[in-house]
Length: 270
Ligand code: AHR
Image (cartoon, rainbow, N blue to C red):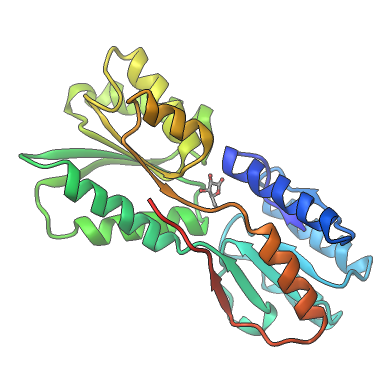
């Protein structure tokens, strides 16, 4: 299993659930942390091919640039399962199935919460995007924009990547606050870690997160629940990191030759 890295609480949860599940089922799991670099994931996949593993699973950091290495896996007759994030490919036969969330729907849920709960006059929104070129950043942005499209009072006044990390979320929010300060009514962060970093920036700027600036986020990790209880975050859309059990189940079925649907969505709420 080639994991993206450990950029967020969500990622840490996904890693530990996957490892625990493999152990519980007696599956020999070779695990590599790519430190958020595609080149490291490609290296890991090549090493799994060389080791002649039964199944390769990976969470692709970005959507593009996988075809060459996946062709190598196909030539070696090793099935590939995508977890968490999707890819863009000219040949969908290069992977068996993709297990993960509907990120566009998560973005829509965030947008619907906004329309239902923040009303009256102009609503200025700043957006913290996830890793550039990653499926969750592209799709959470798209789903949110779909819902607010045509609603002139809702304006995204700034949108920049915070790379899904707490430190970057804080840094970018500081820049947003410097530029627009009191104009900002809402923060939409593509994940909780960035939102939590941004909450610190809002407090340091002398404003109240959750009140002066409504905070909408995605993941629903423990830190987000703590922030919601403290009144500093208003909502977190669930993104379920517990993909390990399904991954191990499907890996066994794939090895046994059982056909799989091309896409397996996880069930999620708000
Ligand atoms: O791909 C899922 C996203 O990746 C999570 O929302 C984010 O926290 C993680 O880093």
